[in-house]
Length: 115
Image 1 (cartoon, rainbow, N blue to C red):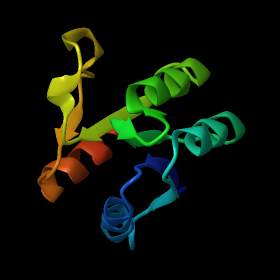
Image 2 (tube, rainbow, N blue to C red):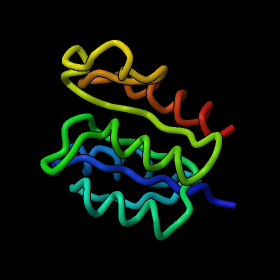
Image 3 (cartoon, rainbow, N blue to C red):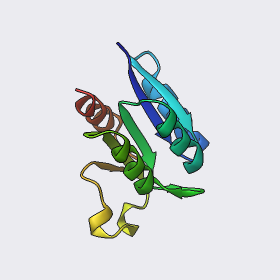
Image 4 (cartoon, one colour):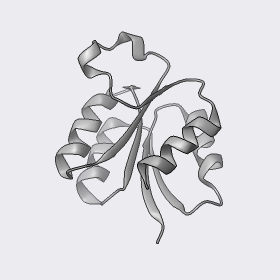
């Protein structure tokens, strides 16, 4: 059964990267460029993984992670950003990727999160 992934990133080029990365895989992705839409999707559907940028135009990816984790225990999330250093240490998640990331390492983290 395909695994469902929600991707939130306000950079259209990055959304295209995610489309290419997951095309031909067993993952079904939903993409959004806004915090508000991502929050709505989280509350209306079930996803196996959230991949979010840190800085969205209308909110923070860390807040999306809180919403996602609040909906389901053991939720899996990956944070991707070019500016993780801006976060206070207590807000930096265990698994995050700085842009640009190595595709092989990123896909391995997705596989591990969904195992």
